[in-house]
Length: 86
Image 1 (tube, one colour):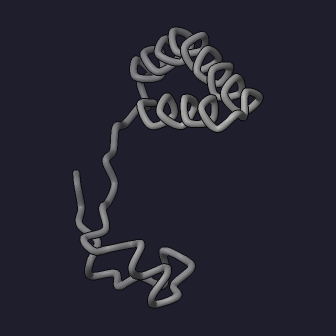
Image 2 (spheres, one colour):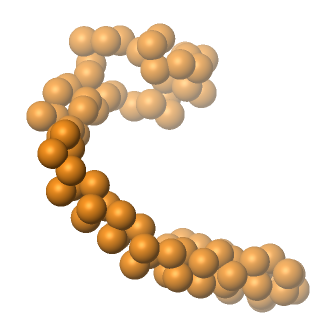
């Protein structure tokens, strides 16, 4: 959100007011939906079948894999480099 704010003011300084106002509108939309989203999340956690899972994390550099080694899918990554977070 901070980077969005910085970008918005850069748009304003660069003479692109339409882009500035688009970022501002997006921020207002995000904050207006936030209470509803948090309420839905709270309700989902109370469901009897709800199970929180952190899943897995890749212990490597995804940017390097994509741009240098030209890997386009997670399935192409070295599977032994994934860590279980649970």
